[in-house]
Length: 148
Image 1 (spheres, rainbow, N blue to C red):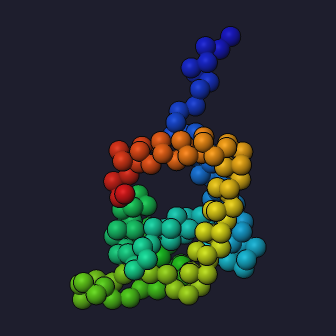
Image 2: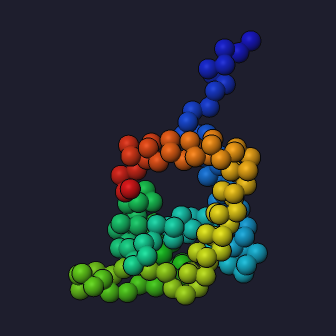
Image 3: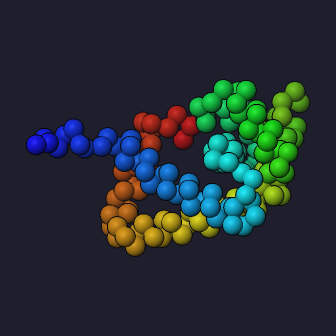
């Protein structure tokens, strides 16, 4: 007989399941839209690129990967036309990684799928529970996301 506590999943894992489901839906939609050469690892790096571009060292830090890993992923994304490296206007020695036109088109697909998935989850959970979940996760982010 189980005491329940051993079978109970921790909150981190419970947050991971829906994240993984959304990521899979986004990657499938991207592939269906012709962006079939982007991997999950590349997508995780690309998702951290700011609107005006982001330095490679910041991408690595935010993605919790080495600078070498981030550089390799950015190289792949650049070869596929998703991102471009441009001079950093605040530091002539530095470069920013920013979305290229193809990357912007892929982001538009991803944003559409994110909205669809959130609408499905809201329909399943209800408006009130969804609002409470969002509020709780935003509050939890205050102590778990150093890059907020």
